Length: 83
Image (cartoon, rainbow, N blue to C red; front, side):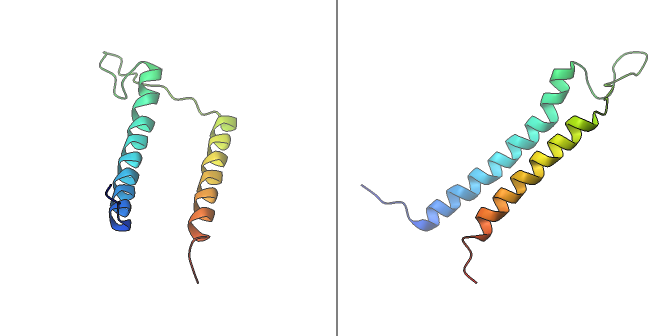
């Protein structure tokens, strides 16, 4: 059997990270549009488009989840550094 070198593992991880970010960004842009069932710029005569309603509870909950995720990722990234 052939062993995968650390350099090859690093390249694989880098490619996986890039693809993951692109898929996540695509999902964040497309899924809300599909769920709403409209396009951002209306094709109709009225020009209504998507009407977004700001929900402060949902917004701050989502913001808290993002900050917590960032904290966990930062913690696990920094703990492997040798100072």
